[in-house]
Image (cartoon, rainbow, N blue to C red; front, top):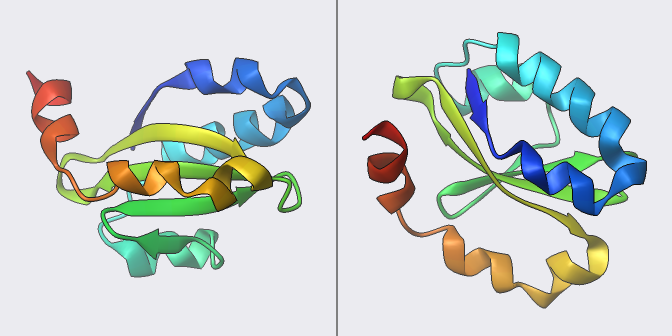
Length: 104
């Protein structure tokens, strides 16, 4: 999988190790569907068009959009529990416009 948006890690320095591991695993993955992803990350949750991962012992939430056919993962946000609970990130989980922008 190709991954984008590594900038989010700078906001949460204590999560950098866990995020680096997630990027390493995801960068080597060739998931074709959510079932294959869940073999590696069984607690990943689908929310609208997004897939949400728990990071660093559930201290952070990694919000992504995964385009299996293009083998691309877009990182939308790395959130604390407080930010996640606010729910603003959900506004980004119902649009496919990112794929068009990313591929062109």
